[in-house]
Length: 173
Image 1: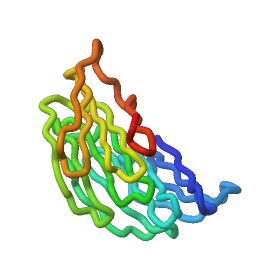
Image 2 (image 1 turned 60 degrees about the horizontal axis):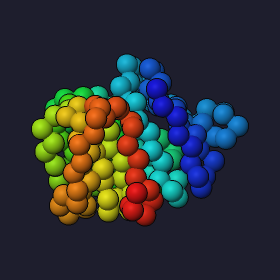
Image 3 (image 1 turned 120 degrees about the vertical axis):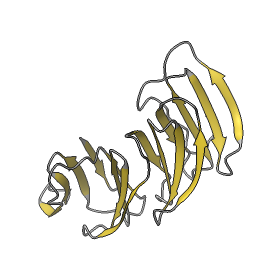
């Protein structure tokens, strides 16, 4: 479902139907999650390789590089459609069928929710998560800051598609 590699360590993580798989760069299996019917479809690895964030259906989880589960939480009531993290994975931004954008910290605590009113199809975050962009089936892109203040809002001609929003690392674009 998803694949991520650490920019700083020897770690490659894959989300499969059979759960998470942690590999070294030679693709030798180091650890696997033996949960059946895993729903993880998003994977992010912090810039220093110390944290792995996985998410799917309505849950988000954090792992250490050796596969130890740090925490797992139900973040939404409805399915997650898109998810992104800051570079250090201290801010996890989740969007989906709950019609809101949810910010979760590195400890699994929900910090804030921003109501959109329609399914949120896509989110993007700057490197430090100071700027978050979100859009959905209402054909509107919302740009908010870390304090949950609306920076701007723009309508588009088409429905925002899943995974179609990106924010530059400095948050200017």
